[in-house]
Structure formats: C-alpha cells, structure tokens
Length: 123
View 1 (tube, rainbow, N blue to C red):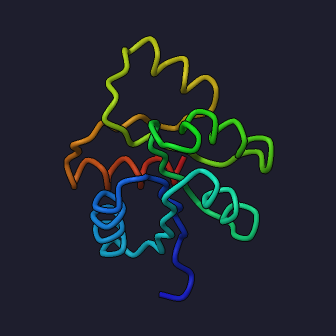
View 2 (view 1 turned 45 degrees about the vertical axis):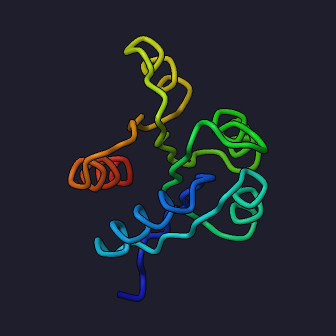
View 3 (view 1 turned 90 degrees about the horizontal axis):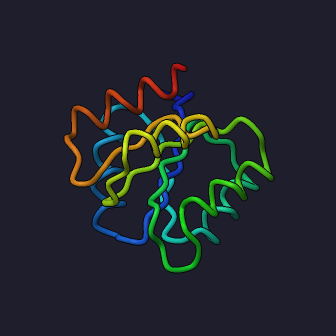
C-alpha cells in the first residue's frame, strides 16, 4: 500500500510505542513514534499525520501542553489521548469540546484501540 495513512504516536514508554506500532502497522497504517513532546513537534513540522496518539504524562511536556502546541502549529489535527490516567466522563466531554477525538486508557484492548483509531480517522 503506497498511500498508507500516517499516525504519530507520542509516549515516553518504549514498550508502549512498540506495541502500538506493531498493532497499527498490521492494520496498514504508517506509524511514526516519538518519545517526547519535543520530538513530536519536530515530526509535526516536517510531516502530515492523519491522527496523533498522545500520552498525557511525559517528562518534557504533558500531552495536554503538546496538544495545545500542535493546535498552534496546524489546526485540525485529530488527536486521541492514550494514557494510564483515568478521567471522569465530564472531563472527557470537556476535552472533546476542545478538539480531542477520543480518550483511551491503558491497558487497552487491541480490537478496541483499532476500532477507535479507525473511527477517529474517519470522522
């Protein structure tokens, strides 16, 4: 497939990056991994992504801070938070109002992750 949809996955845990990349590669996506917000910003400046998966808790900048920086660089990016942090239904609704497509907690179910990624990209 030459026109693979590209996904940026940002997480400071190499094992999570590897698992998500393996799952989504098998689904036909081109997954670019970044271990920090700084690395993610470099990727966003030079590439286009159909979707960005963001961890919330990272050492150099939080996923939320990165999300607001992304919005400043390029409007309209589709973003899903993929994190161990539980969030209330109210908080998730607030995030969706601000542009977050979905909120997935770790550990995640493989089929659920794939379905939610496909839904976010299609929306």
